Amino acid sequence: MHSTMTTVTKPKRAPSTFVLFCNAERGKLNEAEPTLTFGEVSKRLGEMWGKLAPDEKKKFDEPLAALRLKCDEDLAVYKQMYSEIDEEKDERKRIKNAQKLACPRRAPGAFLLFSNAERSKLKAAEPTLTFGEVGKKLGEMWGKLTGDQKNEFNGPVAALRLKYDEELAVYKQAYPDKDEKGDRKRIKKSRKPPGPTRAPSAFLLFAKDARPKMRTINPALSFGDLGKKLGEMWQALDTVDRHIWIVRSNAEKTKLQGNPATETTRKGRPRTHTDDDDDDDDDDDAYGDGDKMEFQ
Image 1 (cartoon, helix red, strand yellow):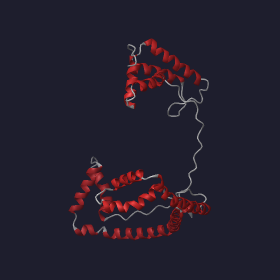
Image 2 (cartoon, rainbow, N blue to C red):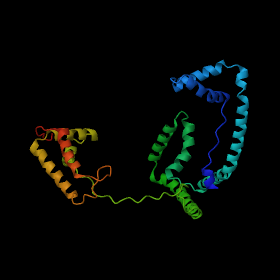
Image 3 (cartoon, rainbow, N blue to C red):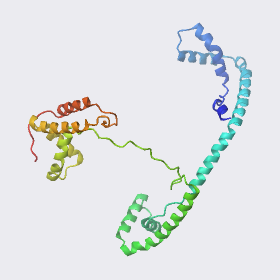
Image 4 (cartoon, one colour):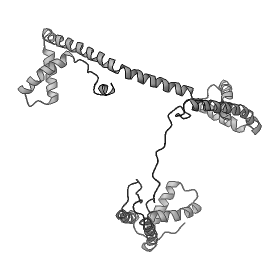
């Protein structure tokens, strides 16, 4: 039955009298005026339909009634064929919902128990507070509690967690293929062991070396400002100093060339070493040559 149902499509709704008129007149109109576009044909058909007398329009009522009757019969057959599948879907949905309802909720923490106890009192004292302000206030109140006061909530938490563990054990026994949220367990796809990453460029090696020094000299620099500063320093290096970092970068690339099959680009595609040569040019073109800049 499954193979039969996959070949049957839901019957289309019966067309209107105007659609029947268009189907009958479109061919004649295209023959009479073949240069009309599709939109112009539709517009002309609409004008022709508007000019028809009511008696002329009624001629299409009888074919329409026959088409609607056939559509209703086809729809009844379709619903009968697919009723079993619909029932099966409803049953699966009911079972899934029942499994989620049966899944126990995690035990709340001590702060949550404190919030539940104090939220109504705080709202009664300050009814104008918004939801976010109430949460912020509760956090401040919790922070001011002493260790002994917080321990008053740890006893109920331990009891709730013990109850949760017992209910979870029963749930896992009843639904072994479900996780703690009531959803089907997701099996992580095995990934290929990470191979060597692409060799760092000359600028990256330079930045890695200079970044800690810049952090020490200017600890207030943000991440973006630090990167901008490193770019300016790289641009100011002379050819000799920059060549030192290019040599180090080439040495790193040579290490990876020993296993070219596993060397990949940043997007995980196999990497060719002709691309590495282009990277050096890109670094030089991007930052240019200049005088050496000292740390300030």
